[in-house]
Length: 204
Length: 204
DNA sequence: CGCATAGTTGACTACGCTCAACCCTGGTGG
DNA sequence: CCACCAGGGTTGAGCGTAGTCAACTATGCG
Image (cartoon, rainbow over the protein chains, first blue to last red):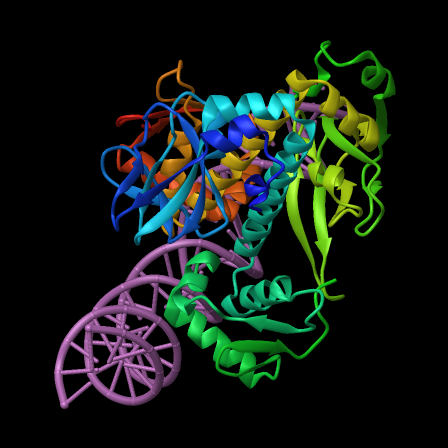
């Protein structure tokens, strides 16, 4: 996902890449602001949020280390949402025009970039698919099946706090907790401190 | 979205593009099948579905005319899901290798392609954002605000059947119907036969 | 040794789903 | 021209389940 940090970057671009440190709560860019760069989160957490009709804010997405941010910036004049750091964070800054021309001139880079975009689409589709499953425990089960690494069979590590996973699944922490115990009682999974093993067959 | 039908395509690619007609229920590709092409739906509806652990199928997405299909094919060896035509459909077929090399050799095409991918990401994010809104009427309201065309102020046309929109919103047709009448009673919208006008301010 | 945060459990509520009946429109054929 | 039918859309009643609020425990950190 962080292909753009590769040494294979054209020198001109590599020299133009800078970093930016954000304090907790600091703003990376505002909604409606003119787009100037594309970002990748190096450390911390950056939240994307939309200010809609005056009244409410809706969080769009939370980008974690290694994740790209605002790829739309490359093909749009203004940012469609705002980005603020949830905790102290550090992002890599790719100036828009330079990145665009680098992509034009370097087919390998462009291909990597496209591959990254396509993977992102795939991940979003999966998350959307999960939301169509109403029952919390079934949604969780499918999520777990997606999470298993091809190598480590039927093993899922929980490095992130549960509440984060709950948010990603569109559940409250309470419901997620209950869903976990339920799956455990039904014998579908077994839980140790930091990891979960699935009992049945893994995802196809 | 159908940028790839542009006349600006390299001749070699343009000649390689073919069409394929699908009967209702016919399979475009199977899950796990080796990837050979990328598609754009010309007419009809093509449903993407995943066969998971033996038991269930989950519909991934329903692609309508103008929408691309299986962009993942370009960067993956096998299709992660199956595609079947819900109704008689016609798709444009872009052979994988030819499209890839065309993208390499033609920066303009590559840029258009990337822009398409980015827009797709944006659309998926929006759909995901909507799902985080629990209350049906509020979810609907935000959906409507997204739908208003910049030009036609506060006007949304309902060309598609409501049940389709309900599915896109993750609601049942009944709930959507009730949400519509509720917004109408609250004075947020007014409905005529085929279009809806928002009362308050449009989306930011 | 507290304090803050995450996680768990319980009781209650609310809202969307399900199933069912009904209306309405458009299309088809007698 | 009307009868019929099919599909989408609208209501209604009841249920189930995830959300909410709350209290309590566990864990990690200063």
